[in-house]
Image (cartoon, rainbow, N blue to C red; front, side):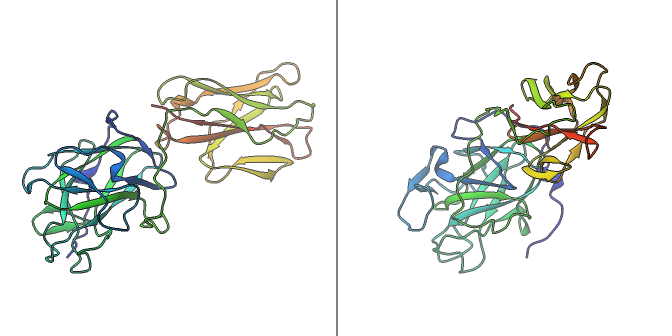
Length: 329
């Protein structure tokens, strides 16, 4: 029986670790992280095999060491992941075990960040024997089974696997939010590697002001939370209210005679007043690195645009183009 109760005591992480020496970090996209187990090298008594068909990637790993039923952390496989969207992520190991008894050779140890080592096991009766399956549960204490869920904040995290039962085999793992459709599709591509590139670029199209000016977004500095990354809107109407908006999905939807460059959900920053001066000199700016939003962090791509007053425009408003950037560490 699976008992449903909060994992917060065990699995709430507040700090992100440094990178491990492997191919990651793998970037979560739209609520899911997909990682092939062979993306990090074998260590200790983990062996790489291709004997059983229908594995994904280039191989799967089998624990070929002695049972480590009370000794977690032996021969750690480490995988770095970059989370963009905070939430409760379900863990599913694509695994296989051959013993006719579905309760034997069916588990490993897993760990997220500085949390505890937890037994992750696969046992849904004979249906999980001798075939690849996604059955994954946590056993906190003997006989206490719970759903394998991690509460993850935006930023970097390290997921680890260590050997427990001899001959347990792992092909890949998925971490996903409950909003993800078909999260256990084995044909999902492995998540892209986060490279740390900022990818700062303008996109979408500005709306020409009533005075014939073309407003434009710009930036200076590095998009790093807590640092200095000044985002500005320039060539606006002087002495008018203006407001930056941002979100996490781009678009180019016709809006008020121009284009709305951000798809819902759209977030607003405080209204500012552009300085008085000649035409086309209006500007506002903000250090985006100090914006208080837990959804902003390493690996997250953000889209920003500015809306401003333009009294001579038929709609009474102006719109800049969009600015996109990806946060680094």
